[in-house]
Length: 381
Image 1 (tube, rainbow, N blue to C red):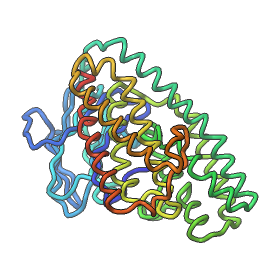
Image 2: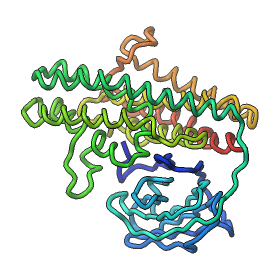
Image 3: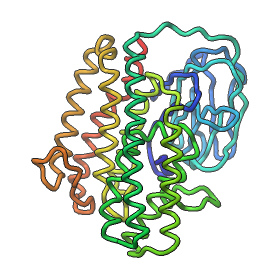
């Protein structure tokens, strides 16, 4: 799920057919070779409209009154790279490796709508250094992982839809959280296509103007808050399966790079911080901890595949990441309904988790997110 307007996340997403690697870092530095992007509530000003291919850096400042999102886009609106939830008065730096072509830089105040845009032409060939063969192996294994997760999601989603079609409220509630696990583990890949995530995983407060609410969370509201299954819910459940089949077919076409894997891992932690820890994600079912665990597992898988190269380049970083992943997973284990069953995804209802416990979870996420934000840089050293 793309972050809502109250999130504070920094996200970089690989796009289908994108020829780039990207990394993000919070920075107040003024790089003379960077494009300065000044975002406002109704404007997006850039200091250059043409740059050589290769490394492209955006120094972003939000001078508006709303949190904004800045994106580099292909002409068909596929996302090349993005930074979400840039708060008013905040500066961020976004760096990407981009081949020659035509693009747009978009500023989207409130992270909704078309936004204000500026053309960007990237010229030349932009030679990139040869990369470690172990990174190619990591990409191939991660691609297979993403496909496996999509393949496993379909029968679970079909079981969820079948229970709704049968009007079985209890069975549908039981099938809801398991049907989401594969999606939550690999959501950055799905988000790279641009059009699938809004159909299947948008919350009510994340809808664009005129957008019909569909997908998991619309059905979640019907099952838990409205306590009903009607003809509309049956239609929506069937549509969810159709949309997820589209995702399953397209996973293999996603452009995946070592750096997009690293940034995707960080994005998954941002998802936890801005939706799961707060209880906003599954606000009706309170199954947030299942999604929480899925996000962490997906982030850890990407990290583990990149770890051999990252350990060569920055052993201290990987040591810290190993420590923080272990700590967060151990903490999550205490919220299983049966803490001794490490294979179970039965977690306590999140409305039973108090504020002090949520703070503890948040602290553990933040302790992991900080070193994870440095993984992309370690991979491309």
